[in-house]
Image (cartoon, rainbow, N blue to C red; front, side):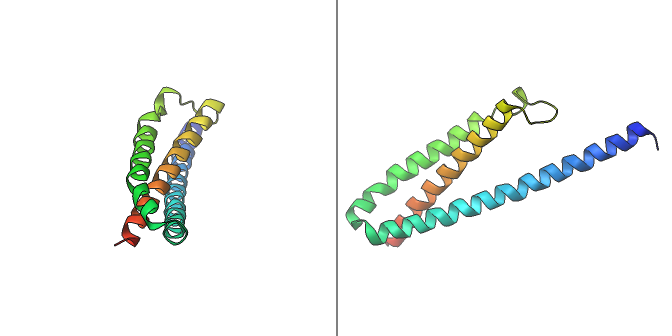
Length: 119
């Protein structure tokens, strides 16, 4: 096996590890945002006047969906990607994308929890 072939195999394995880690990190982030959203929604049902909570459902869903869609369209991906993926621009892009998805998912789950709790 040549040196080039060995480095290519190492790169593929490293890429697979990166993708696998990103997959599980994304799952963890979605789970955390769902639990947080459910908890805040339950607290809103208990501590907020039910009539006020009922009026929050639609705005929360709209803002959550807005952030999810904006985050999806925001990802620049390959336009700014370097070989290492460690530039400041790439890191900011990833954090903004993850933040938008986290907040958007949390807001949608809060609204669904409030809506579900009032039935």
